[in-house]
Image 1 (cartoon, rainbow, N blue to C red):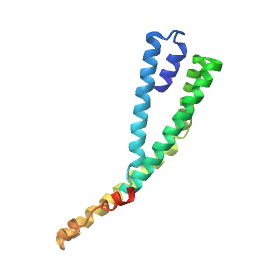
Image 2 (cartoon, rainbow, N blue to C red; image 1 turned 30 degrees about the vertical axis):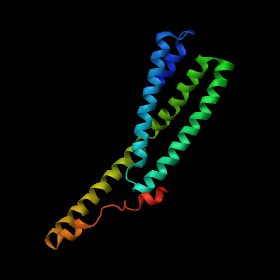
Image 3 (tube, one colour; image 1 turned 180 degrees about the vertical axis):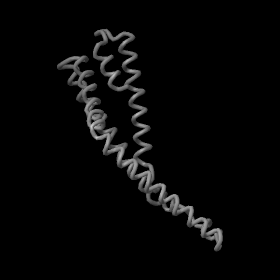
Image 4 (tube, rainbow, N blue to C red; image 1 turned 90 degrees about the vertical axis):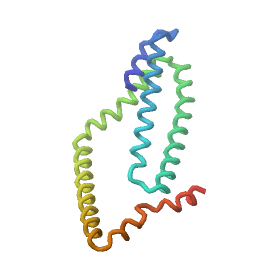
Length: 156
């Protein structure tokens, strides 16, 4: 979607028009999809204190980079034009796609290992629950699953 936005913006007429409007819509929509998905993936499996710290750091890094890129894009448009900026943007999006595609086997192997570890942990948790149900299970269920009580103290 982001590559399509960059290419559409690159071939848009100088006065903009409908083609540039579509390209900018695709750019914003693609950015939001990537931002939300990336934020969700980043904080998966973390406790609340770590999640808030990491998400705050990631947001600060993303928005600082965005500010620098906005200033830089103004310079590129002034020097080389909007078409050059959009082609550069499409190339910058294509680079991670090529790298990830070349690493697909490695990423798949990691995903399989993670799923197997998760299944083993699930089986162990099921065995623990079964054992607890025969020997005073209510004590196990009264214990908190996560230590969220001190999370607000960490934020202050």
